[in-house]
Image (cartoon, rainbow, N blue to C red; front, top):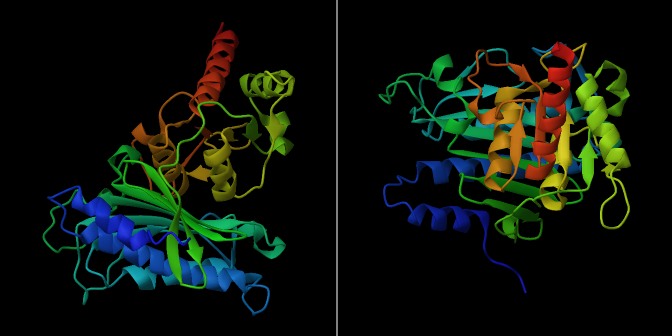
Length: 340
């Protein structure tokens, strides 16, 4: 039997629980879903059209830009610039904030997005994704352009966040802070249908996700923690399993469903980590916390970090609450030992 709880219906029913709602956030999420459908269509036929490969340009981070990255960025911008719900946007692919064209109405929300996370995996047909984060503007809601101040808010101020994973099926996962819900795109209907209701991350997992190729650059506490996972035996006498895809969306999506921890730490080469606070870590932390998990930078809650710049990088430890608590303990104990 087909589940006719579509994404649009789910959003509208959630809106009814808040009598003060204006419908703007619902419309904003609907526009994001439309952009996701268009991007999904192109991702699924990427091997058949001239869309793979590099453009020859570098993005703000000095990384080579792939054609599909550019397409995803453009689709999100075109889907979101005219609805009248946003005052400003920011993208991982753009150095500065993205203004709403002056001939369109400006609204009270702010959108930050990573148009195509894990794009280095595109040519290998590995799961990739889109990540988005929504805030309310903090500057006066008077129709004026949004500012950098509107974008640089701590993650705890998010009103919604989500991701779309393009894999064997396309799935959109989102939260407004009250439960996490997953919708799978049915290509026959062209609709996102509820497939994962009120997702809860397991309290403890059996999977760790980290790039162990960087082992020699890690701090001693992290090395000891990973060794502990490899030696730890649970009720069935098995240690943790290593699972690392190299696409944050794919790794965290798996751990959200099965439990475990995803780590991209600071190390000697990257003292601030590599993942971006505003486009990756904040939205994923908002989702994971809404599902009962935790996300820290090694010490502090990710969502409480006050951002200082648009493309700020932070280390992240995110996943099942018991696993995050355990890595925090290892890091703290070894930091104390190093300072003694």
